[in-house]
Each structure stands twice: as C-alpha cells, then as structure tokens.
Image (cartoon, rainbow, N blue to C red; front, side, top):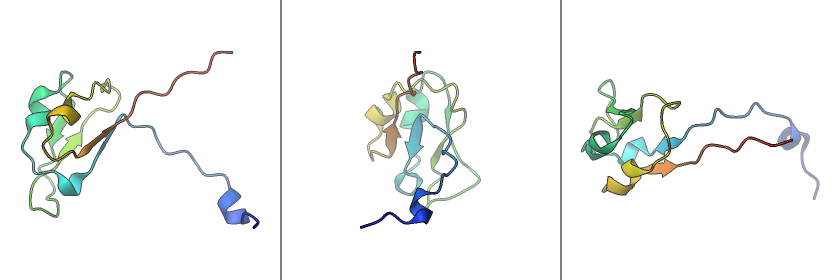
Length: 90
C-alpha cells in the first residue's frame, strides 16, 4: 500500500505546549490554580464548557515548568503534562 502524497506533504509543526487541558471535562474547582507554583493557571471566565463550568486555561506556556502538580490534584484528570523537548547536541 502506497502512502498518498497528501499524507507526505510537509506540515508546519504545532507549537509546543507543556500542558494540554481537556476543557470539556473541567469542573472549574480551581484546585490546580491554587497549587500551581508559577501561577500560570486561571479560570477562563470568557467561556463555559459543555458541563456548564468555566474551564481552566494555561496563561503562560513559557513559564510552566511541567511540574505536574496540577495533574496530581485534579479530581477529573483533565491535564496531560509534557516535558520540554530536549535540545540536540552536535
């Protein structure tokens, strides 16, 4: 089976983010906001998710250290935490 030319087309890489939030599962309890040592999490008061709550949002991706404290306290497991990409040594 051959790979289609569309699948092989080069795409722009997505911007890296240390934290992915499943906003439609967030209940806005703010436990993660309280525990974040860098204070980069906040409730997004401009929107309401499918559950009817204001979801949490990452306000400054560059300041996030991927410490995963937010994911540890979240009762609904809405966070996926990624470590920063390693720089290549030449």
